[in-house]
Structure formats: structure tokens, C-alpha cells
Length: 236
Ligand SMILES: NC(=O)c1ccc[n+]([C@@H]2O[C@H](COP(=O)([O-])OP(=O)(O)OC[C@H]3O[C@@H](n4cnc5c(N)ncnc54)[C@H](OP(=O)(O)O)[C@@H]3O)[C@@H](O)[C@H]2O)c1
Image 1 (tube, rainbow, N blue to C red):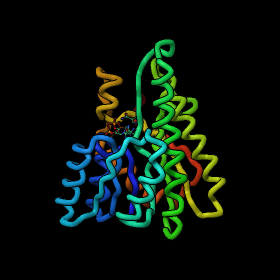
Image 2: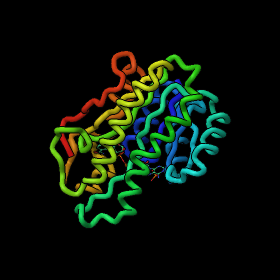
Image 3: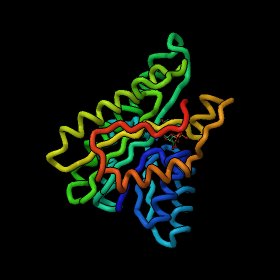
């Protein structure tokens, strides 16, 4: 399978890249930090003994170049995609009244508009695939009815918006056999979590969460469509 995965330079995305390539799948990896991304790509390819990982160093908020850049990179690397994992995310933890509008816009851009745009861009490249699975990584913070935490208002709202988009697109894309699901994940010990909640220790590490997410990406489309699934031992 070929998986386009955003946010692969660290955290859950880096662990997912390793997990997919260890099982022989090909990955197109996106994030801004070229140096860290290349380290992940080199590590994956060295372990696999072949070129399974490709890097696309790119700031996803550069929406004007997104379409051209991605179309040409996908064509050059694999030409097709079986699954898209919208994993890149941004979290700025601040009291609601102290959030600058630019911070709020950035969170909505990375957590909502970019995934939406990437789905649009990737659809034509999925047309020949038997899988055609879009996995949007949301959060228990944006899952209706779960405990909420102070300082995550815009982050939670942007993840909730991505969840609703998931439900809408599953309906709209069903004629094309594209499955769209969201994983509303709970706490995982990553840099994002440590920056937002320095005192907190999460019950899962990135490889543990990546193991489930890999399975879900490859197999979950056979069981779920248009679902926002809580994947959580604990929140935040
Ligand atoms: N960790 C948790 O407890 C937790 C809980 C619920 C949900 N989540 C969600 O799970 C996903 C992964 O989280 P994580 O904890 O692994 O986060 P992380 O360690 O902060 O990693 C985020 C990744 O996103 C990339 N990224 C951010 N902005 C980008 C941009 N503008 N363009 C391209 N790449 C960008 C980062 O790479 P660069 O800096 O190199 O660009 C990085 O690789 C996120 O969507 C997060 O909201 C995490």
C-alpha cells in the first residue's frame, strides 16, 4: 500500500512511518522540518533495506502552493495513493481570552483547512486503489461529550470541525467507494503533549498508538465509514 502521511517528523507520525515501512508499505511523508524528516526517511529505508519512504518537506499552511507541489511530488514518487492520514496538527494552549486571532487561524488552518484541501488533492490519486481510505486524526478534546480542558478551546473546535467534515465526506464520497473516518485519540506521550501539559504522563507512547492506527488505516475501512472513533485510555 502507499500511504500519504502528514506530520511525520516526530511524535505519532514518525512512529507511524516506521510501523508502515517495517511492514513493507510505502509512505510519502510530509512536515516542515526537513532535517528531522530526512532522519525519519533514512531510518525507515535503512531498516527496510529498500526505498519505501519518501519525504515531502513542506509547510502545509502554504495553501497557494499546496496543490501544485503535492500533485507533482505524488506523481514523481508513486503516482497513486491508497490511504491518506491527516495527522499533522497544531496545538496552542492558552486561555480563550488570550488567544491571538492569528493563533486561532493557524490552528484552524493546520487542523481543518489543510486536511480538507489534502483530501481534495489526493482523491484523483486514489481512484485506482482498492482501499481508498482517508483517516483524519482528531482528538478527544474535540469529541462531543468528553471531558474538556481549559486552554484548548480553538484546538478542540478545530478538531471537532474535522470530525464533522469526516461525517459529511463519507456521505458525499460513497459513490466513489472512498471511506472517510476520524480517530479521536486520547493522550499519547509526544512533544505536543509535553509542551501543552508538562506535568502529565500519558498512558501510551507513539509506537503503541501507531500500531493501532496502522491496523485501522489498512483494515478499518472494511468496518467503518463516516465514524469518529474515540481511541482513548485517558484524556487530555
Ligand atoms: N499527543 C497527543 O496526546 C494527542 C492527543 C490527541 C490528538 N493528537 C493529534 O495527533 C496528531 C499528532 O500529534 P503528535 O502529538 O504526534 O504531535 P507533534 O509531536 O507535535 O507532531 C506534529 C507533527 O505535525 C507536523 N506539522 C505541524 N504543523 C505543520 C505544518 N504547518 N506543515 C507540515 N507539518 C506540520 C510537525 O512537523 P514539523 O514541525 O516538522 O512541521 C510534526 O511532525 C495531531 O493531529 C494531534 O493534534 C495528539
